[in-house]
Length: 329
Ligand code: UFG
Image 1 (cartoon, rainbow, N blue to C red):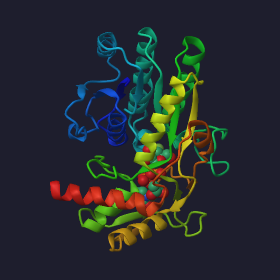
Image 2: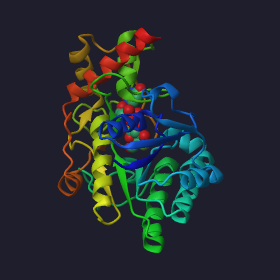
Image 3: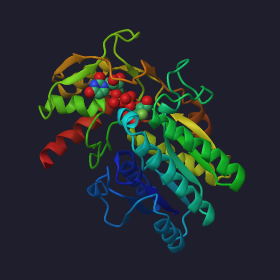
Image 4: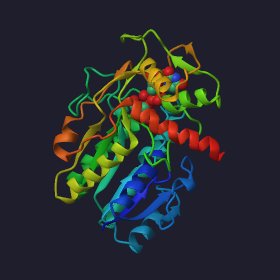
C-alpha cells in the first residue's frame, strides 16, 4: 500500500482516479479547492479531504511535513479552451504558477514521483494523424500553452533536481464509472456527450452542432473519446512505471479511433433510443478538425490496455450516470 496525494480529486477525472486508487488498496489524501470539483464526488468516507489551494505553499509545506507521500497525482486545473483565450492570466496563474509552487514544494520536501494531467491541446493544429509523442508541440490557445509550459518545467525539474514525472495527454475524456456511483459533472458543461444526453433528457435546449463544413467525411469534427476509467488506469500504470525506476516521460492517451460529432449523436440515439434534439451552428473558435491519438507508446511501455474502447459503451455509462443524476436532483 502506498500513500498518495491526489490534487483535484473532487473533479471529473480526479474522482474516478480516487475510486480506482482505493480499489487498488492505496492510502489517499485529496487536496481540492472545490472551485470546479464537488465535495460529494468523493463518495468514500475514509478519505482525508483537505479543502485548499495547490498554489498555497504553506499548506503544501504542512501536508508534506505531516505525511510521507509515495507519489502525487495533479489533476487540478482550468480546462476551457475558449475561456483561456479571454482570460489568459487566470490560466497561467492557475495552471502554470500554482503548479510551479507544487513542484518547488515537492523538491524541497523530497516528494515524488508526479503524474501530471496534460492534454491533446499541447499539440495545436495537427500536422499528421494519429498524433504520437514525436508530433511538434505548437499550442494555439493559452490552455494548451499552459499545459505545454508545465511539461517543459517537468523535464527541467528532472534534469536539475531529479523529480521524476509522467505527463499524460488526455484526448477526449468521456463516460462514467461503470458501477454508476460517479460521473461527469462540469459547471458550466461544455462537453459534447453530457450536453447531448441532457438534450435527450429535455434538461437543456437542443445541442448546437458546431460546424458541418470541416474537411471530414460528414463535415463535423472528429475526436478520440477515451473512457475515464481507462484514463484512470493509465495513471496507475504510470505510477508503477516510475516506482520501477523508469525515466521521466509523457504519453498520449486515446483509443486511436476518431468519431465525428455526428457519429457521437448517432451513438447517443442507439444507446438512449431517442434522437438527440440538435440544431446546426457555426464553428466554435479554436476547434481543430481532427484529433486522434497514437497511444502505442502507452500500450507498449506502460502495458496499458483500454477496456471500454467502444463508443456505445462509453455513451451507455455516461447515460446511466445522467439518469441517476436526474433522479438525485
Ligand atoms: N461540440 C459541439 N457542440 C457542443 C459541444 C461540443 O458540436 O455543444 C463539438 C466540438 O466542436 C468538438 C466536439 O464536439 O468538435 C468535442 O467537443 P468537447 O467540447 O466535448 O471537447 P473538445 O475536443 O473541445 O475538448 C477536449 C477537452 C479539452 C481539451 C481539448 C484538447 O475537453 O479540455 O479536448 O483539444 F483542451
